[in-house]
Image (cartoon, rainbow, N blue to C red; front, top):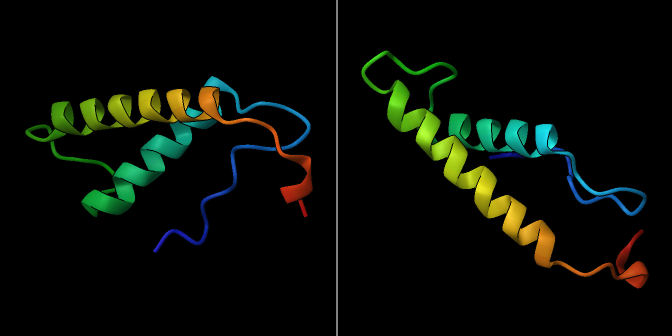
Length: 71
């Protein structure tokens, strides 16, 4: 389903806020099936993007760097 999503956690630098928000937007687009929601659904769409971006921030902040896992 999401083969085109780029990895955010790179060994040389942390993901930027913009990268996290773009990934959250891409995820919500994939799950909802809408590239751009209607005006009626805009608020729910944006709230989902925000919630997912916040969850990704927490996840990335809690992960530890494991050099032996990097290919």
